[in-house]
Picture 1 (tube, one colour):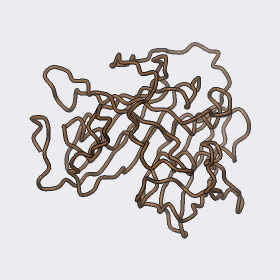
Picture 2 (picture 1 turned 180 degrees about the horizontal axis):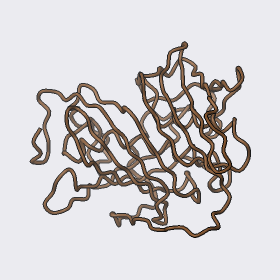
Picture 3 (picture 1 turned 90 degrees about the horizontal axis):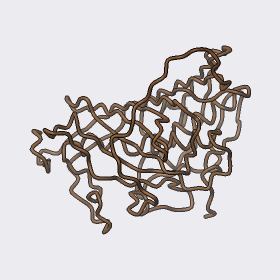
Length: 305
């Protein structure tokens, strides 16, 4: 099978007015039965971009995962033009397989012209201080093939406050798209790359903050030896991202810090902040996930299960 680039993986062709289909098969993990949520958000946004005039940039996106889409069946991206304003444009995208709704997206694009009036301004800084030049322990290295994955991820040691609690701890991750992306800073491929990066790490954050293994190698373990899987099932329910700055490259290192203000009733809420390689906040995300734990699940911490 011929290898494709990240940008080629995003190619769509139009099959009807405001309806698109992916040109290349979707990537999934070796033996995976569903397509990663970040990839679906990127492809749906790529379809929405095709209905826009020039000069608009993705501001925020809300994604509802309705069902688990299969990687070997083509997707149809149905774009609905909800509103076209001077400052904001809103699109809805329904992703279907075999005429069944799999994912629902609501995407807002903002006028990319510089803001000239007075404005409030503040931001937050990274909690973690560790800097990484190159990813050396890549969670996605095994199983990478001609269709992807086009991402590299490395989990860093958890950051704990005193006393150590799941609701005050931070899961840091470094990640980037495998490039080079042959497009200017902040252009559409970089935005779609950021959407890819925004989702992969979040699902495992709440278990990590509770010290519960999900089958990944231990943090810092280059041997690749798998840990115990403590869940019968875990899946993302919804995902929201707000992009604060388009002055970034998705093929350069990003620093992601994930916290969780709440877990309970088989669900968890994760909040993540994505920083550029220079430590500037470029995006914020919120994700809700669903977990079914095994009866014999164990924690490395004193967390009560």
